[in-house]
Length: 137
Image (cartoon, rainbow, N blue to C red; front, side, top):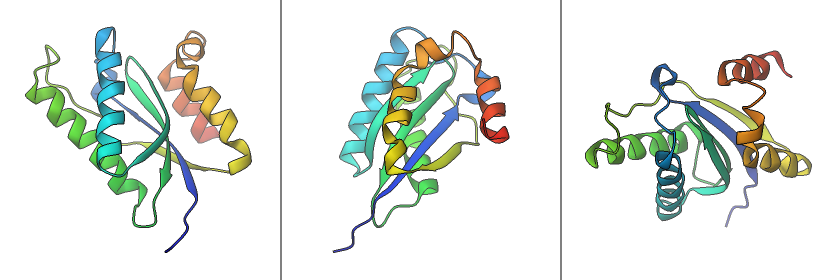
């Protein structure tokens, strides 16, 4: 059996940054994505969201690639949310996502960052966050 230990911090937003994930929808989305991921062999070690985007710390399995994992998470959730009519508007994710590998020594920092999304976004918007990612800050 192969041993793979690849950790990825993934972030993706809602289409046009629409605040689909506000209020109760946030709790519903977090729970559903976690349950569905587990059912489909996707190991999410930490997860949280803000009104317009998601953060996940994912441990990839030996037969998984990040593009497939993100596509499965996003696709299944938007299909489910629209089928259940959970939103007034049709739920949709933006097409792009951010993903970066995480060193095992840095896992605790990423977990803490993901857990503290509420506090973090009182200081910085999603757009500022994405700009900082690509600037390496």
